Length: 334
Image 1 (cartoon, rainbow, N blue to C red):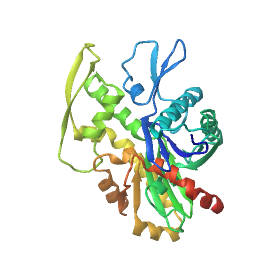
Image 2: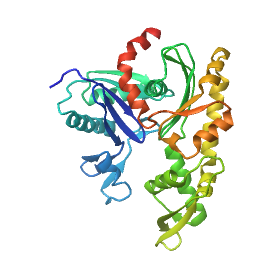
Image 3: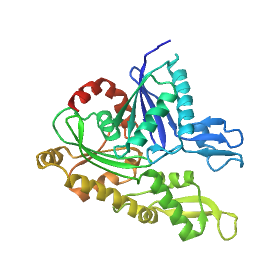
């Protein structure tokens, strides 16, 4: 039994990841909890709970206790973290007792939201809780030299938020957060299908459409996809075919907001660091960065090189775990 193990947690709107120093990523599950509304018992967490979304009887609801990267339901989040710690212990093969935990928070989170994250993690059995800003964690996870005085630009497109930050010498120089991410893109697709075809589809279908035929705002070879949903006029199940170009137009507004945020952040960059950005470019991370054609579109729009992080989905979690070794340096800087 290990008493003082050190773990990093990426508490994301869409996924929760746990990183252990020795084993790397030991857990990667959706941040979804299934609850019995009558007894308030937690029935399932993670993959099992996600498979229940939109498919449960009335008294069981599958909820996502994190909204826009911050805690929306405190009790459910604490319960989810307890279950996650249990699962992590199983994966490690020994019990994690009173671990030292590093958790990432959105850089735009208020002090109340940060305190809620700390309390929830402590409530799940952590000994000490250290918070690290998400863009810094993502930069560490993407192997960028965060503790050197050079500009590293991170664009982290997560489930609930998109964060754009310029990091230099262990801290955030300029940063902007918008509450638009993968979830908003799914919502755009749901609304498009509803308006144009009078068809109601669920979140999971929308996510599959985004992954399969979603495209950034550049020319590409047209692809089609068949989807099923409920016809709002007849109430009966119906199948339709969607093209990648119409999904592209559905996502246009959200993508332009993300571009605007990147531009606004770069405008606030000190001139000394601008030269570094021209040389080193921008690093994309987070699940949303995997949208087809996003890299090419952004590099065309902002005229600097755009690179994809080695593990976009896991960068923040890896960085959160690795930051345990860097954090003393970072705290000295602060």
